[in-house]
Length: 135
Image (tube, rainbow, N blue to C red; front, side, top):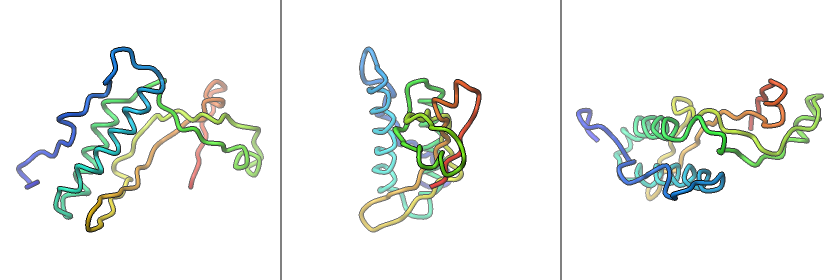
């Protein structure tokens, strides 16, 4: 888009496609929004993709968060043990989408990107502790 145009890949995406969303449906809709953003960015000139990614991820964050239903099924038991911590939960709640730290990659036919998510160990959340995982 030109500088005078607002980029919005979400004109057809609704956060809730089902009348009674469950944990699973909300996670599917969140994932679909991330995938649709990548597809939408394919049609944006390369020099505008970074801005489009940031705006799109901000819209996804605003649409889906905060949520008690979005999580990443990660097994960080090994990481916890190497850091001297107890066994963590396998479910990690998504509490943030950081568009300013995310990066779009340009290829000829596709538009993949690296999305930076902020997560909290669901097991540690009940004890008031956050867990930082790099990878």
